[in-house]
Image (cartoon, rainbow, N blue to C red; front, side, top):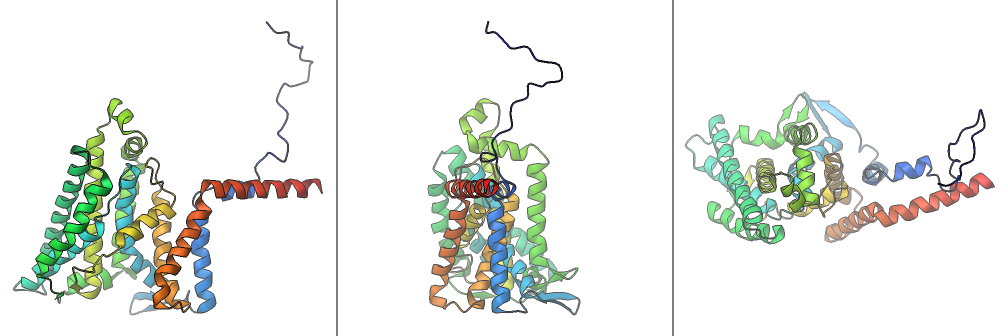
Length: 366
């Protein structure tokens, strides 16, 4: 046994504090939080808009409704937030759903076609029945994706790519390749209506988001989803029904995409199956990644997804507001998203923390 030195009365054996150079500063700890950079990027976009348009942040109350650029942003973020909420859970299981845009188009095509063919086109019951039918089909499509991934074991990117391609054709068949226009106030209210001065579209999106957060963070569902995403085989051996979990998240993703498709169609009271929901899956994936959820599966952040969806919607508003040419829209958007993702990179954050630590240590010794 090694000899130990006696402890003198009144002394302690606590280890010496770490040198100041190795202790993380408060700023470095804050910058290490995964939500810092998305929030800062969102704030920067808002500042840029205020510089370009000083009245950008003004919100006015007119006829009992809120109006303004910020209100438009939260309304336009609703479809992205809906799709991104479902996409977050899919990605958390180490999957991906590329078919959400096609599912949104199918939902809009079914709802608008049923309303158009109804004898009482403007009736409330007509809109409710049309939307219910469309969402039921979306659930069935989600079941199909879940079956391909969880039962047949097809790679998620391939399984959902099938419906991504075929879904557009199905939506075109439903509408006979025509732009279908409807007149129904109840259906229009999904996008243009207000409740308690707030846009109904955003209320629906936040309601779905809040319910998802409640179920995943106040029950064991979120832990089970993360377990499947981290190691599906280990979770199966531990008694987790990985197949059921995967099936559930794809059904939920299809349902969220269907609601988003209805909101987009209600915004114009029409459906163009060839373009409705086009590339919304990419915006949803970007919102999830910007929010800090890893594409490798495992832990996910619904709060980050909310910030990411608001960021994407604000960026779409910023591009025309600062005078970016239409031809450069996608290029500018890509550059901004790449910059935010680079700032979230673990290597970039580690390098930034080390530089901040070195600077703080030099300042302390100066």
